[in-house]
Length: 205
Image (tube, rainbow, N blue to C red):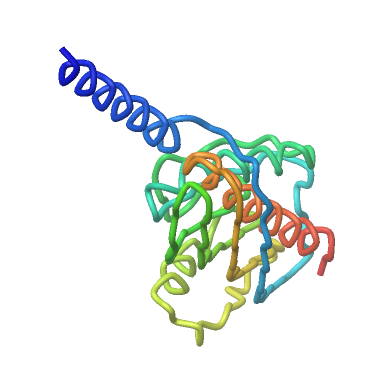
């Protein structure tokens, strides 16, 4: 009888431990402190009488790391809407959009996660076009071709193109679920991208 009781206690303890551990991979909670550093590089090009519809309608396309891209899309959308933009999510990459567009690639993601400590290194590349054209540059920059030069086609229509890279280094200590940690990384990424883009858009030419 005593052995059965001990076995039941062990099984119950194992079940409780499994539930607690699984909660870190399913639920959304965070009681931790984060230190996040961001480094960025931006290049911008304007031609003609540039007219940027800000705030206005904008396409948002995000690709890359599946574990993070959905959270990053959600947070960037929220930041752009906070700035007054009418955001339309683009499901696929196109050679041309019928309005201004922001294209984002989660290029590289490395890190360590435990329920009480997490660290990450993210590389984000983004490209903005004020008229929805010239998206081929997004593909070139994504391939690491940093020597690409924006060219004036001779059209009288003004446009603005912005190419940016963001490196995010994060260390989080404390109790944090993996979902909450990914949301934290996405929020930091979104704030930096949206702020940089808004500064470039407002600074015309």
